[in-house]
Image (tube, rainbow, N blue to C red):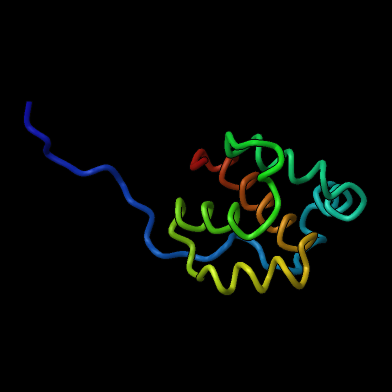
Length: 104
């Protein structure tokens, strides 16, 4: 059997929503603000990872790499260090958008 085409790859892109775009999905925003560990477990579950891995720079970096989202480990660290709830909500919003688009 001959391969005639390569699987579609994701071109360089950005997160689907901004870091401070909390009002775009109030349920995610409220969960991230009032129950950050629950948000972390939800993200980890979406990514088939251990619940304890849901928050932080490594999960964000893995996600960015998987979907070819521009950035670096240094920026991931700075974003998570300075506002973990915002970073977690941005990641969860992006996951939900990709699910709706059939890209996740």
